[in-house]
Each structure stands twice: as structure tokens, then as C-alpha cells.
Picture 1 (cartoon, one colour):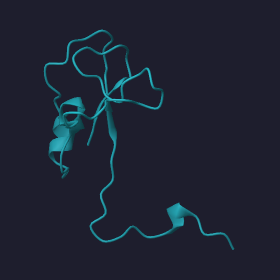
Picture 2: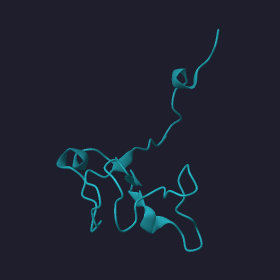
Picture 3: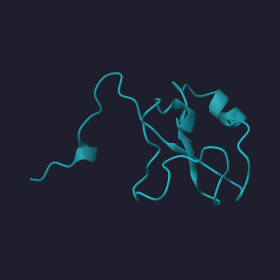
Picture 4: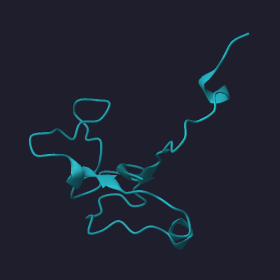
Length: 83
């Protein structure tokens, strides 16, 4: 019988992450607002391009595209951060 990762119970105090995506193309990022529905849920923090340490790189799956949009979004659906 095969054991799949989804079949294993999560460890105690396990955190889960979800990306926050841009809803507008070519938009300047001034702040990231969480919807009121998220306010009722507990989340630990938002990680964005600003959290990459000095000397670190904002590189996504492809070397020529950033992991997170920094100042300006390039397209709808571009990752802004991770909660």
C-alpha cells in the first residue's frame, strides 16, 4: 500500500502557506491589504520582496522573473507575497 504525503497527519504546530497575487497589471505596490475575512483567521506573517535580506535575490522559478513583485506588478496574478 502506498503512503502519500497528503495521507500523513500534519505535525503539531505545522504552518501552511498561501501566495497573495496581484489583481491588477502594471500597478504600483503601495501596501498589501488583507481582506476582512482573513482578519478573522489567524495568520503569522506576510513575506514579501521587502523581507528578502540584503545580498539575497528575488528570483522565481525562471532566472529572469522575480519571485515577488517589488515596486510595480507586471501582470495580473503575479505573486506579491506569501502568508
